[in-house]
Length: 112
Image 1 (cartoon, rainbow, N blue to C red):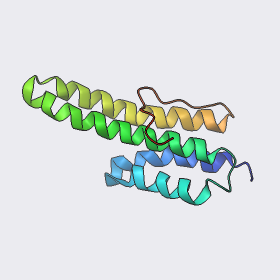
Image 2: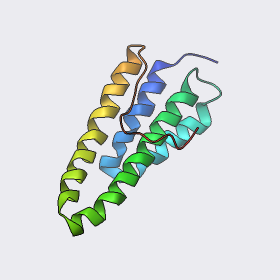
Image 3: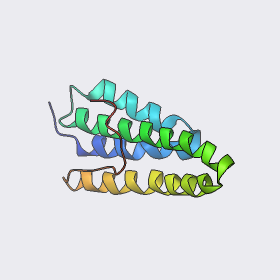
Image 4: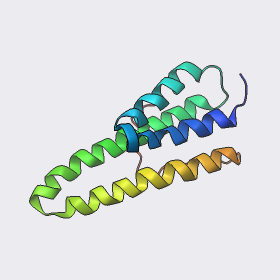
């Protein structure tokens, strides 16, 4: 296994493709994780972390839809989810590049 911080950083930054394509922020990290988890040191942990974060954001977005219809608070939740979806991939990519361990808040541990 080889150490490749740039690929780990790219895995975290690829989540931002959701802003452009809508679903690319899930598919690209999934493909990188599946193809490189046995070749790059730490890719298995980082890939699971990224995918769990993406799945969690999707679940939170689905939950916010009825809240929009019922209370109007879902709009605030969607805005917060959008900010989190932009800020944390960038922060964690910087952490990975510096050799630190990244973390995603409110991320459910779905893929173990």
